[in-house]
Length: 202
Image (cartoon, rainbow, N blue to C red; front, side, top):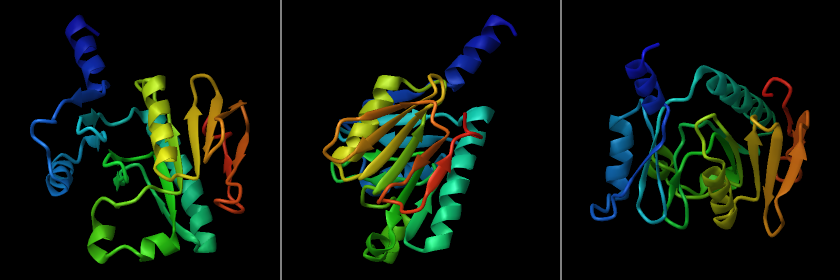
């Protein structure tokens, strides 16, 4: 691989942050921007910065679908709520638009949304979220995102850091718990009976 190819590859895998405060995209404009650029994943901070994330690499994509598969399989068995994959956008109470790698909301909260709200970016914060750190993710930034989820109503969040083989568990009104190389995770009382098997994810 020559230098030009290497530089191009590095650029493709880099997350970009754009200051859009002077433009002030409306929710509808941000939604349409995401629809018009489906090959990219967009998020927006509470202060209006636009974050553009490239498609994941093969290894991360495979682990992401394994996580989503396990969460969806549990969700379909109990009908307590709905599971969502990494392409789902949420409008958090603080104004940020986020797309966790996997998430879940209770059926009651889902049914309280209008049909239009269900079709577009969901205007609430999920009760449960998972973020899988990819090689290009800045650890400090993804930790801030997990704290943002918790501050906006997430009751249980897992940050899976494959590079260090650690799990960071975020709960309401508690310090972050760090686990070293666990082989499974419990959904606790938020997702009763859910056990994420981490063996195929490590």
